[in-house]
Image (cartoon, rainbow, N blue to C red; front, side):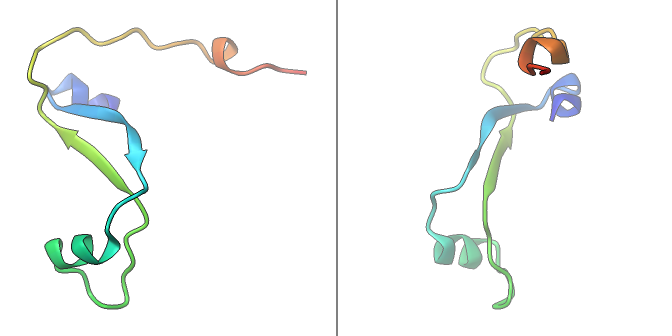
Length: 64
């Protein structure tokens, strides 16, 4: 996803898990044996901003 930001794409930083499964199957013309389990929002941002700095792993994980 961050690579997409580098080339001008955008994203909403969360997965969508609550949606009408049948509607998505019809919209994407999925085979009957396929089941959508989540969606990821992607696209182009309305405004151009700067990339946020990456956080170091030690800031997000506690080692014990």
